[in-house]
Length: 225
Image 1 (cartoon, one colour):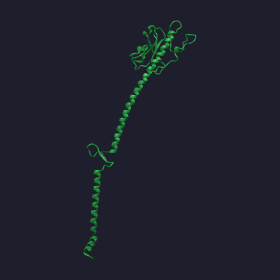
Image 2: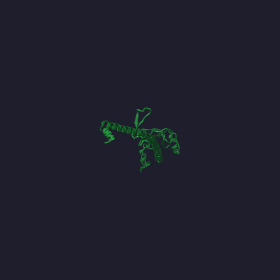
Image 3: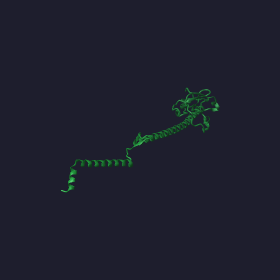
Image 4: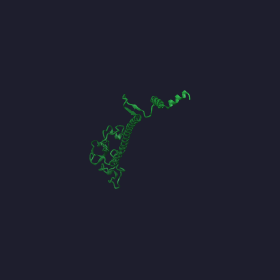
C-alpha cells in the first residue's frame, strides 16, 4: 500500500473531516437560499405585497382593501347621480301632471259655467240661477225635468266633488271655482272667456261664472256649500 492511500485512509478515519465538509455544504446552501430570496424581492412583486400609505413605511394598507375603498367610493358617486336624476324626473313628472290637471279644470269649470247659463237662459218666466249644483242635473221647473249637466264633476285639483260656489247678486249660484290654494302654472294664453284668469295667484281665482249683463261684478264667493 502506497503512502498516498495511507494518508487518505487516515483522513477518512478522522471525524473532523466530515464535520468540516458538512459545515461548508450548509453554508453554501444558506447563501444560495438567501440569494434566491433576495432576487425574488428585487425582481418580482407578490400579489399580497403590502403597499405603504404616505411617507410612513410602518403603515401599510393591503392592496385588496384599497381596491374595495375605490369601489365603495364609486358606488356612492353613482348613487348620488341616480338620486339627482330621479329627483329631476320626479319634478318633471309632477310639473306635467299639474299641467294636465289644469287643462282638466278649465274643461270641467266651463262645463259648469255652460250648465248654469243653460239653467238661467231656459228659465220659465223670470230668469233665475240654480239654488244648488244638483239642480243642474235635474231641473224640475218643467213638467219634464231638464238636464243641464250630465254629472257632478270632481275638482281635479283637490279630487273632491266639493266646489267653491259663487253666489249671484240676488239669489242662487252663478259660478264655481276650485278650493285649491296652490299657485297655477298656467298664467297666460287663456281663451277669451277665461281671460280674467291671467296672473292669478291661486286656483281659487279661476272662477267659472255665468255673468249676464255684467252681474258678475259684485260676486260673492261662498265656501260653505
